[in-house]
Image (cartoon, helix red, strand yellow):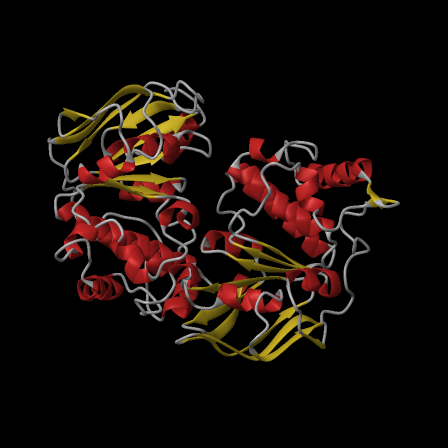
Length: 516
């Protein structure tokens, strides 16, 4: 099994691996891409950047054969191509894509997922020995601590993402696109991924890289093509650019990419949520978790992947059953049959980390998704809702949150990831809840949308609401929180009671289970 097929040192002459010529693409009522023209050199790591909804993912979907109905030309190595589907692009174009969303079959082995549809054969039968040996070789190169024969459902989210990367390498693609590949990865897994991407580049493979983490772009990429509102703006050389220039090209104005409080703390002494000895006695995901949330406070939760933060939050909002421990909302103990409906009625809701699975209804429009948690506000006589009220509410948040495209009847599933996040935020802001849990609120969100979400958080606490912010980005957790709780392996290892105590090295130490 040859992992890197161009190990002779890559191409001798740097031509164009990919060229887009006057690409136009429209969906009903939305002109998504407008005369996009630029090129990607062979053997370079080329970033595609822009705000959510700028057209980056749509352009990649055209390249990979997902969308066939577009105007303009796509050239690979100087030759015009048009693929029927993603498999056609893999087979006849030698191009693969690593998606942001984890796409695996949970009950199959890692090897079966990596080779699916392209399994090695011995006569009419699958050669499982060769399959697992080949895939194990790739996994070892990726520094993965799991193997081909492992069942996928036993893996973490970060490990499942690495399967997609292994699949692209398995296909010996000479062009690989990565769409937010580090979103579910730990820092160690991200370092391993970057090492592999650099090796791919060294061996002549062309990389297209989409990320909202600007530090990743400067660390990894050679050049970056910037999109804004479906149009190509410019291509910048990363070594000759800086963060301010990049952001200004993306959004047309200066925006801070760093999380910071815009106003003094609004926290009071009033306790609106108390958690005492919360323990997962079934799956052992967390143990003896106790803390308080005050009115007007932004309480941060930080920890590495697998620390148990999300699992605790799911219990608080009734998504998972409470098995041991007590939860008090405004000094009233929650009942044993706690569920999400009762949590909503008691004023607590959660923006899920996995927005596509649990954040919104894939078969619903923006109007329907925004109104789903506050239907009683739009009820008329009987069991009917007032559609005009729902539309007016949606249009208000389309302006308030700058949701694009500004089409209330648009299917939410067809929106970009960042705009889907804004629709979910509008859903909870439409309710009268007093406690909002933000689980990875800026995951896959561009710098302008991040700044908007941070501003809205300030407005929410100014209105007397209380927020819990779960974040894997330490600068974000430190920048937003009034107090910060650090978790490691299901336990709270440290509670930092004020911002003066925030120290990056110390917090990282607590996150890996260290003590004082």
